[in-house]
Amino acid sequence: MDEQIKRIIDDSYDASQEDTVLSIVKDFYSRKLMSIAIMVWVWAILFFAGAVYSATQFFKSDETQLQIMYAAIFIPCVLSIGFMKVFAWEMVNRHSIKREIKRLELCIADLAKSLDKAG
Image (cartoon, rainbow, N blue to C red; front, side, top):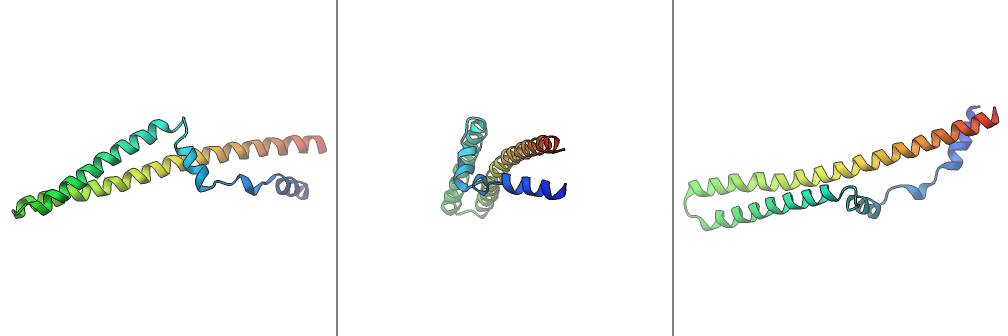
């Protein structure tokens, strides 16, 4: 019985179906995730503009108090850009994991059908 299960799983596994970088990018810009992609880009652009503005103002100002304020604005803006990237990556991973679970469910259903026919 175990030999039969291992043989069915080995025969049905296709390494070409593994996720590639191109397929991950296509998934992120698909219709399902387009609203999230737009939100990530809008927020990232806003944070980038805030970082550029605060950096330029930091070097233009002569007062220490203003330099501290612009530095305090710059650091959270740059960190927020990183958070947007992490959020986007997690959304892509979430979508990929859901797809893998569906593949496993189909494999289990096929395995159950083949075992019913054999037994």
